[in-house]
Image 1: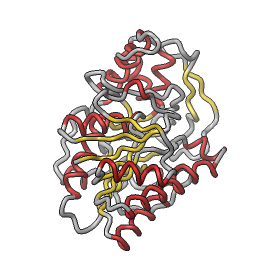
Image 2 (image 1 turned 180 degrees about the vertical axis):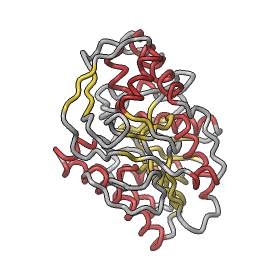
Image 3 (image 1 turned 30 degrees about the vertical axis):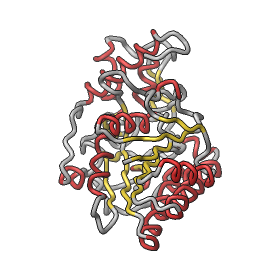
Image 4 (image 1 turned 90 degrees about the vertical axis):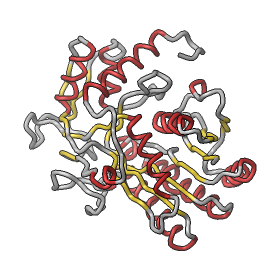
Length: 331
């Protein structure tokens, strides 16, 4: 089976590519390298540098490689940035998703797996959020991804395109064997930023508000190891064979950690004290969002790295390896 991975030179797409290779499958990557790093793409994987919104290019890749399945990761993912430049987010996350879904339908692709987000839920009042919770996103990022979900569901209803939608909670960590990790140096995820502070790349770590109605006043999030998330995509792919209806899955561990708990874990793993600075709340941040992952577990998903300390440890080892890496070389 040959699989097109959009955004496969990026963080999550890169780990999914490794999982596909480990399974004996044959990925082809399409990436514009705006946030990914082509030097980390495995040498036995074809990388096409181009725009996912170029429908003719996508169609050509599908035909020439006999693509059966598309894993669509390419997107913009910064919530705060989506408020500053919403039209760019709707272009990249919605318009271009429509384009690649149309190319899939027109060229006989059977399966489509969409990278989505817990941001489609918005601010939930439930301790655990399941897949049937109201979809009321509070950011342009969340709305742009929800629109892509709707497009995919409609393509399934009209054209029979099999689909799986995976809603990620907070993704962190790195491949335990250091084959891949966070390659986007401008990434704004909490653990990445905290590790940058531990490395001395940043003078301090910002805490966006400490007056939330939580035990320590900081927001609570569900963190998932990127390699466990990659394995969820392989499981979704297996489940699509013979599926009559689409699949929507929360991808998280069902446990929440506050910002302060995460920073404490970073200090414990690195052995370094972080300088912290509390600033005003960030627009678009829910107080707490934690996954109800029972649907994913019921399909047989067995996470291997579901401890916060393990997630931080693997991410830290990756950052240290990157810091030692001569420019232009692979790890």
